Image (tube, rainbow, N blue to C red; front, side):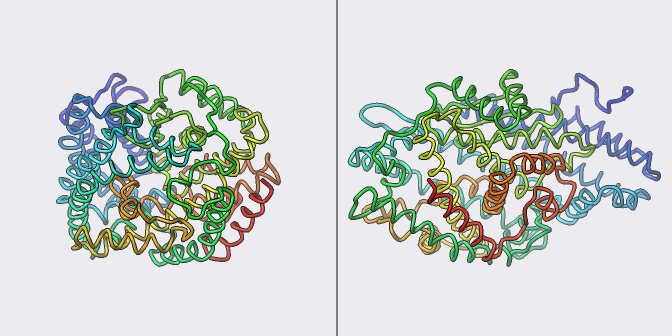
Length: 563
């Protein structure tokens, strides 16, 4: 160990043998007094951050090009050969701290990390490590399958994301053609994806049983560290969305149907502009997208623009859509470097700009909380991580004139964003409720699964939409959601955060400076306080009762009328 670092400055993870000596050193360190504890925690965090960043890059490189066999091998090698040993050793290190004379000092100085330490020890099972390794590889199969889908329209080939953009076309016959081509390709993969999920369900069920839980739903609730609300609270939240949000979604869809002058509103009519205007395409290249993002972040806060520009200069942005690239978008924090990597699939739409605002919010959050001494403070739960990103979407909306100088186009974009913020709540509730069913009924057939989804989705999908002739698209709609495959139960947090973001935006409209100051303060806090306190620091409540949902929906309704 040199003067300040536990690991050599040129350290790289080649294999397990390069890591093991540092775990052995950690285990041998004394833990009786506060100074010893501080040194131990400093070294442990440095090791954790190094391992996390190495794994991050392996994941990023594989997602950037799912056809890269070397990247795939590197990722899978880590998952198979390194991570199980890492997890086993960190459990030993955690137990060392928990059983040491310094534990009371640790609990006194680090309340949230102490809570997480206790949870990690309680839920750990050695026999689950191999299952986790198998799961991580299988979960990546979803992205690999989706990334290879090719949609041919008028003899031109499109990725799934690029084809979906064509659903904004004003020619209804063309939209229907595109929609059918997309869902035909999805139906072709439906049984493969059903089988993939069945394999994942079996492994997840075994993990839960090994850990002493009756089902994976209850296990994952605890595993995700949901200390501040219960499973019953989530189910009540499903009902609140059904009662308070669904009626607004129906109104939005009815207004769309009327504006388009249709006898029947079909699923291919949901993205087109109701006034027959061309789709908003605010940028024609990735360079322009990045330039406009910097201008918008600058209008919100110059520090945001500086952080984002720094990522661009260091080639930490991969934004375009292409074949062989995994679907979706993410911001991956690189804690050791105090950087982030932003990944997305841009095709030129306004939605891409909104997505970049969202991922930018994650990147700013990661930048601001990086000052904490332990990685536990940086591993923010999704309820607060998504609050940072979704709030950035709505706050930035007040400055979208930099990308849409035409006031009519600006209103269109704002209206679509707000409508989307409402519509997504019903979709999230449907997906989450479906996952509750999946894991409470582990011995179900593919037919029973599709039937369960159909019944659940009927309770959250607008009745104004006519699915006749596209029934299969309805039945397999759940397969669009990668979280079901890759991150089970990590999704309801988006709904919590969306409501929180609406509340922050409401405050921003009234007092921009004060709201932004609180927002940044919340981001700097990382995970140093329980969720209700973090939300309070942001100037809002962590509550999801029907009354609270109704209050926020009234505000959004009023804003929509003004557009």
